[in-house]
Image 1 (cartoon, helix red, strand yellow):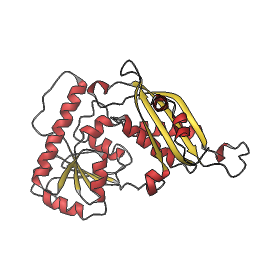
Image 2 (cartoon, helix red, strand yellow):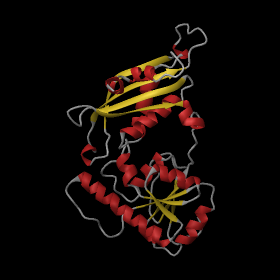
Image 3 (cartoon, helix red, strand yellow):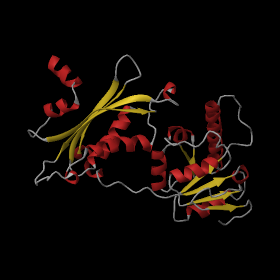
Image 4 (tube, helix red, strand yellow):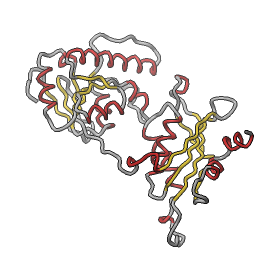
Length: 307
């Protein structure tokens, strides 16, 4: 038992050696790579960074030809650190388990990688290091490796409160659903002002929840409108032809590059969200909007029934 405990807490290199099935293999390793990052599911972990330590081992395909001291013929250490940086930049995550799985999948997309051990530890959450370790292989991830599915480029439609209440709403949904791209509705706060507090971060949460209340009001007006809160839900809904209404709290609060705290205008979040998901087009019904970037914005006054 003592040897099993020692092995469990050993560096992933020793774990890799102990669990190898096919005899000696080639490995590269990254030890004690520390990054300052915002991560965690607890409220106390939001809005602040903490030290996170990465230890990673990658088993690689043995070289069948001369390397000739050419870095392009090996799996470079940079590819491992780049995998960490890419996943940290993609989205704020709550769980180390989620981050570890995403890093492992990205590493295993490298042609030379066969199996990887990923250990991640928080260094500032207690008297010791708190962490997780996972092992993944190309076989575990199956055919998904190297075949990333392209996300659709939706049409984002900002609706004013007047548009939500309009008798033309059903006709707009009919016309938009018949077009060649998924539809995501974005809305602002309801006409009733939300509570006001002197703390800016608290006010941001109140404002976002107010928008989500308005999203459910829209969904109640037309059963085809499905309120969605996460990127995973959005991707699934778009691929399955659903009309989405964006509930912004989770995506905004979990974003690495969040909109400014003062971005509280009726179309500010819509423009930020459209850029985030690489929308092909933005339509604004009943609200004046300016492009603010390369995505075209088309304004439609209330009363038009054909888009």
